[in-house]
Image 1 (cartoon, one colour):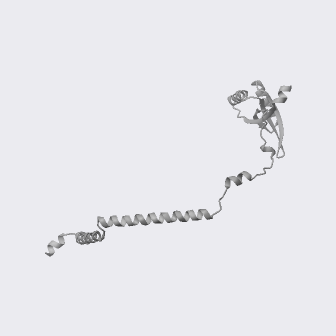
Image 2: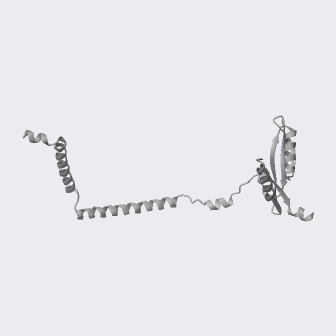
Image 3: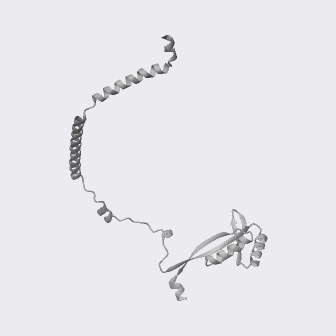
Length: 187
């Protein structure tokens, strides 16, 4: 008999009794559950208790709502006035004014006036309207070459294309111009 027991692996000796004990425990658990009729009775009692709790909560909420002050938000909001300070930057364009823009292309910026003049001459040879403007930046004099001004984007885009074709990367500057409709009609 000892030869027979040595041929059965050890894990079978452990798992077989464990499964048997688990099966007996499961049967005991099933015996403690109520039968179908008792289960329906428990469900019915739980349902009535839940409905009574909901009804009590509604009554309590109604009592509290009647005791609280009524908040009349919309009436209070209509009566309030907010004073807003007048800021010049926030003023909109008048309705009778026509808003248009002036476009400039900066073709270059040089420290030497000769370089700026040479760039301006090259741009004039390309058929572009140019001018030169000097600026003092951090104590140094810079000479900027501009193309334009243009009153519409189409002309500005044509000049931009010419500059790019000649390996010049321009910087666009857009400035609003407000024209009064009355002033333009009077002239």
